[in-house]
Length: 96
Image (cartoon, rainbow, N blue to C red; front, side, top):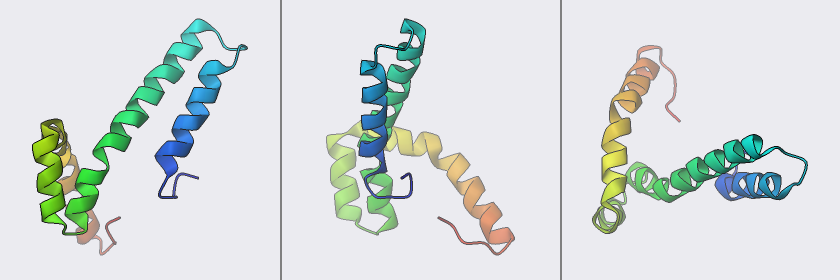
């Protein structure tokens, strides 16, 4: 399920169903709500790096202008991404 293009929608649906389930404690539901919020934020951010990967720079620029937080999130994640990419190149692996 997590390798599919619409993985975020599926996972959000799972958390929404868990939140609605009466058998969980309020603490557990709060954890589900936090995970759901993280997934929704990731779902909103995902088009920006995807546009960059596909070299659709006009689309990426439009997203950054309309949602400046995407650019800030990209810059926040950049060091970890570069470290991953450099390590993959060093060992001859492919970058996802």
